Length: 217
Image 1 (cartoon, rainbow, N blue to C red):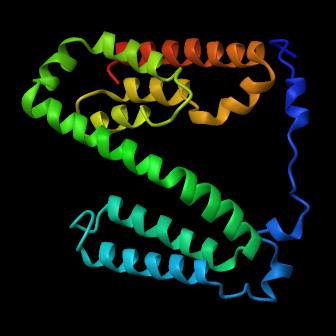
Image 2 (cartoon, rainbow, N blue to C red):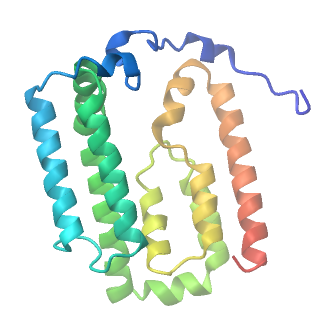
């Protein structure tokens, strides 16, 4: 009420099936009957176990057992737990058909080309001197790129931050402004509400980023 912000009426149109037992993932009552061992579950579990072993043994990923490797192993163990316990319907429809078949390959391609862009730019285009000389413009560009209803371009700034090319303020600005394709459902119902949300995130992210940039972060 302080800012006179009220939920969009279009949000009421979202149809969730949280009460559907087929999608109830962390209900202890359902764990009494262990999920069926279907082919998709076997394949995913096998791939996860192999990946955990390869990362833990140092064949892929960070060689030293630092926070990066620990984080990867913990996330993979959580994923292993989820894949092992979710109901068949949730595994097939939400994890396999939606996350893996629709999104994983996009995330992979965006990450690959973002890293390729940074590596190519540093080696052949003198990207590092240009970025360090024009950080204020990079900060503004990160906010404008965040307007794109796709999370992929954000990986470019993640990659640059991991290489030490940009400060945290630029990464934070991009992270706040961008919301991936999460705004598309609302955009299909209300362009006005979508523009209001994106405008708020743009000014808030850019404002906070500028403050952090000028204090040296």
